Length: 406
Image 1: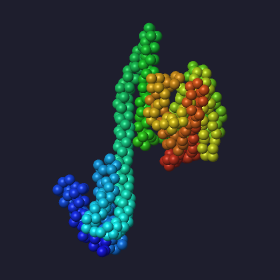
Image 2: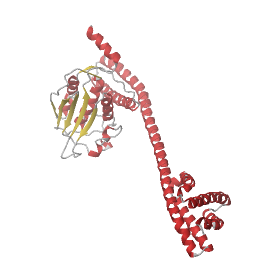
Image 3: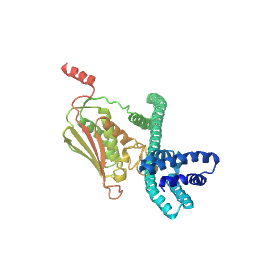
Image 4: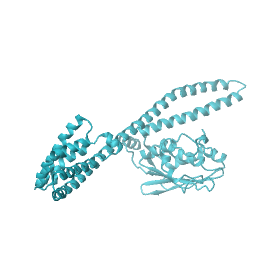
């Protein structure tokens, strides 16, 4: 007897038995019977034509029908279903056929079963990959939205704080003028100086918040003008002279080739970037330590290196420090001072520095053997800047050409 004829003889008992085992409700059972009839007809065609590909349409449909709940619990439901379908073929065959005929049927159905299992597994994997990819994309979009919300909050909060800060600054200045006319001014001047320092520090934090928001939203605009890097570094050294003396630290400065050449850059922003790095070197180097400012010219770039003999940075933190709000050390050591030993901060300085240097077409990275407060391995911040000979803005370029002609 042909295998296709044997299958048709056991079609009805096979179908009812499979439906009974798979379905609990009448509604679900009716729908399942239709699917089993469809599977059966495709199976018979596959057997008669010797082509297992006849089963592809229903196998792919079944694989694609996995619900989101199935994906969540990672249940592979169709492989057990295929096994059950084949078991019921054998069970029904044993009732109606001889052992030899049952063996004949099983031998023909086994390749079909293996083929079906492979098709199901492949398409379930594709469906699973699609589901995971969609879920990851959704999570990424949610994280991006959260990051944008944080940036928006920073921008709004910074601008809201700026208004009362301006008022405080204005009234304190007027108070200073009144105190100047008073004979007993010493104590009052001390109080006003304290207010002024607080205002200055608050203003710096607010400006940092605004800068971070601008960098996050690609709104940081640079004013490219003729700039000399060595002049920026000289001014920076002078600014921190008192802090270095107070901390009994030695600053060694070397002549850096290329820094005396005129380039086009935003000098004010570069000063801010270098300042953030140097202040960190002072902050994380113990009293009596040494800081070195050196560098070299590499083709059309200049590399500035700020080294210290401080506590160093652990390898796992050497990338993280350039991400906003990532401060190292114990938060309880927080200090408003930019130069006190190991004083904490809001974690905005280095991310801003990176944003400024990236906008200039440069880069920054750090090298350190690790973190150790006893051995003091120190660290070296490398700043790479292009020696831009012309301003990137065509209108600015024409402006400077006109000025030089005059």
